[in-house]
Image 1 (cartoon, rainbow, N blue to C red):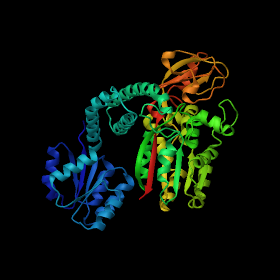
Image 2 (image 1 turned 180 degrees about the vertical axis):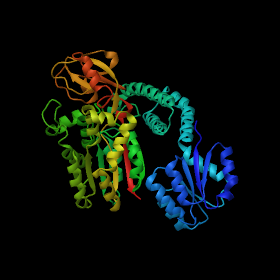
Image 3 (image 1 turned 60 degrees about the vertical axis):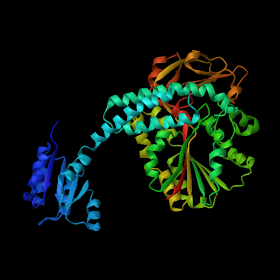
Image 4 (image 1 turned 90 degrees about the vertical axis):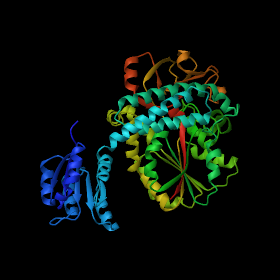
Length: 517
């Protein structure tokens, strides 16, 4: 490994010889200069890992030297060293993008700590994170193999996502592979858990029924509407827990997270079913029976979620909530800008519902467009592009407007998505639906061991197209593929993000309550 190289610029450099000898003994290569002009020339002719720069030098000052260095080497870490302890001097230096700030007289331990923090931070964090996960690995494994409750499954999923985000900072590909395998194992076990309990949950049997799509408004939104501030209920289509955690730091610049938790989506984990269930407070066949004019069958023409506002109004009416509310669905950039311009008109409403359809479009675009596939190559990149979108979106500006007006926000979603890798063969007639994670029809042919099979749709409150309709759902990272043109189909859809089936990523989804700071 090459020695880390330091340039130390100080007009009293001769007095610092003990420090420089100390650093050399520690394995660092140190070059010195006693003035800013020479220091700039040295930096322009050699490569350094870090610069120690005295603030108060004759000739050009430390801050002037700093400004010149940053113009040509913006990413070079510079540590300002000064006798000046006044706050304005610190602010001046920090505002000039220094890496650190040390007060004279500096001692050797301060210098070593500064170097480790600025040059070896990533390595130390990586090693510590990998070690911490290794210690937690066994506990997670034991928990996964035990009989868990719905709440315990949510905690395990949160923990796995936590380690996924933390280990992104690690250069250890081996430990990331271990986590990937453990998450896959958890998904296998979770899928069995969901299948074994789903019908009981829908019928509220067994005492461990989680909050689900059709109960989340009643159980989670209604109790927080007592606040006198307007509440914005923002449903970001297809937002996974890891994506929420990725955008959370940006949102926390303006808001306090009062509560962020998970709830369970119904199946199919697809917009038509899960989102209609959220806004109606009903399961699909209950909507079909109670409000037939608001239910659109999958085979019918037109948008399957065109009556969300009407269903939500009926839900409020059923629970005696006399609430003035607005409803906006954002499907493109221009619609987002238009909503931003009209935000002041919404502040007199008790409740404002916004459905924002970007993440879902990103998921579909990643399947269809090669350039998006390359930009969102893996889970980490998928999160990164979601963060980049949010930072530069009208939705972020909408959040900032709400913060200024002291409004409250709820962030949630209708379902998540999972990266699919494993094809499962299925045969169906021409009326079989096209979704890659669930199929329904009267003549489906498949291997029963490879799917979650529901022979009687009434059991899970799903509509029957005819008397022999059955549903099958993919588990974990599987996706359905037809035997005809099999290889092309598999290669096209493998490693895309899909939804509709049973996985932790699709099923366990965020419900976040925010208040302004």
